[in-house]
Amino acid sequence: MRTSRATSVALLSLGLGGCNSILDLKDLESVNEAQVWKDPALAEAYVNKVYADNLPGWSTGDASTSDESPGGTGYMYGQLTESSVDYWCTRNTTDCQHPPYDRIRSINILLAEIDKGTLDAILSKRLKGEGYFFRAWAYWELVKRYGGVPLVLEPQELTDDLLVSRSPTSQCVAQILSDLDQAIALLPAISVGAGNDGHVHKGTAMALKGRVLLYYASPQFNRTDDITRWQSAYDANLAARDYLTSKGFGLYPDFEKLWFVEMNPEAIFVRRYRYPGARVDQNGQEIGSVHRWAAATRPLDESQGATGANRPTVEMVNAFPMHDGRPIANNPAYDSMYFWKNRDPRFKATIAYNGAVWELSGKAGRRQWTYVGGESNNPTPTGFYTRKAVDPRADALGAFNGQTQWIEIRFAEVLMNLAEAANAIGHTQEAYDQIIALRARAGIDPGTGLYGLDPGMSGAALQAAIMLERQIEFAYEAKRFWDLRRNMLFEALLNGTRRHGVTITLTVPAAQWNQVRNTVDLESEYQNYFQTQSKVLDTQFPINWQASYYFFAIPASQLQLNSKLAQTVGWAGGTFDPLQ
Image 1 (cartoon, rainbow, N blue to C red):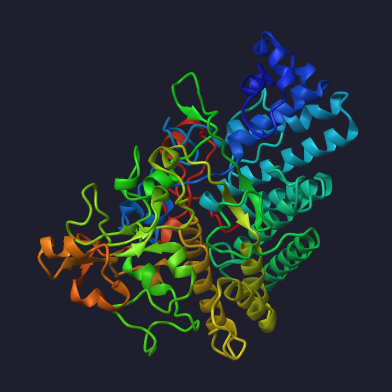
Image 2: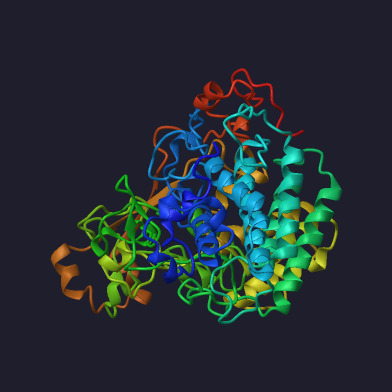
């Protein structure tokens, strides 16, 4: 497959920092591959395409595959088949436009060819670092789903044996870590400020290394609880935290607004969006510049073109502690009727409930109504909406053309990754310190200095506190599913249960309510107008996650294409052990 190694430069306008000079070229498809690595503009454009193809972004489906939102039936009801999780992109779908091995091939070409050119040494070093980073990222996204996969580290030719066997998971992880170490050595040291424009940097690679090692130490991969893996995870996350801190990175003071301040000190690994500027490819698919997450998350009365995602469950609502940091259960400050009062401030930054002030489309004083009859278009089935990362200043069109940055790794995650690894190796106080930092930023009452945490926790008890903190801090950030999966908690926490919502009804005639709805003091009179009943969202089946889902099956279409691929143990005909 040597033909058109460098014709990826055809999509030069994608990615970061496009170079106008290359737009003067008359026929980009005819660019000789050797030219790319002699021309800084072409080389930058090639790597911009790597960014565009590999940067993660907003997704509207992740919350439904956990206890955050309803849905995700295949996962949650144990109905997945061998071909359900098709991250190999054998099906041409909107969510799967860039097959991982196509992306890896482009990176392999970069790494194989760049030293043959005449680029400035500083530029060449950075571009190689970006290549190593994104190859590690692409392989990690495969490995965390399937375990070991075929390792292809050179651009394959048509004359090569293209049928490659799966490498052991341990070998794949070692390669990912090697690529990240290369990236750490090559990428520039970027500090918070104008130079931090969205390109990956040394701190990004260090943070990703910490995440990879944390996953590899977690029960999904580490069934024997090998303490050396936890030590490695601790070392990497400590190094990442300390390095990032030295460069000005840290927790952004305002939890609610951190999404809307571009490249703030908490943003470590980011995809930035731009509107106008979206482009349509030859298949009619929009590429590059906007996302629909906000449109799908907002109530349809204040949106367009997308709907129905990220509706919070009662289980998620109840997970948030009170303002004193203590759980709602047996808490004298908790009132089930006025459940939103005295809660962890992250609650109101994350959850919109019936009567909540939510000034969408810039409408001053606007309240969100979720009672029966309160919404005319596609009412939420749970009684709640997610307000996190939904910019209230945007109107419906602005939400449809979403520009809010996606922060794949933020500094808060580095702290929580460090806390988890620290607890595993017995550094109890250090684990406490990371959780306390997040709770202090959130505005929880410090109390005796523990911000509502139980004193004297260690081991399993402290791990449970860490998992709860992650659930709250990273709600609706595509983290909960992966945290449950890597810790093998689906069976223990969710199997046999059903997710719940609420049905809210008026207790007065609608005409009477309409006369007072804009003036009533809901903080003291809510019970005079509404009653709430619990309802089951999983009406057909309880949650029934299967143990085989901790490593998904290789899609049947891939097995048919490559006779050397072995199916994963736990699936029909499976012989490949992902724990090796």
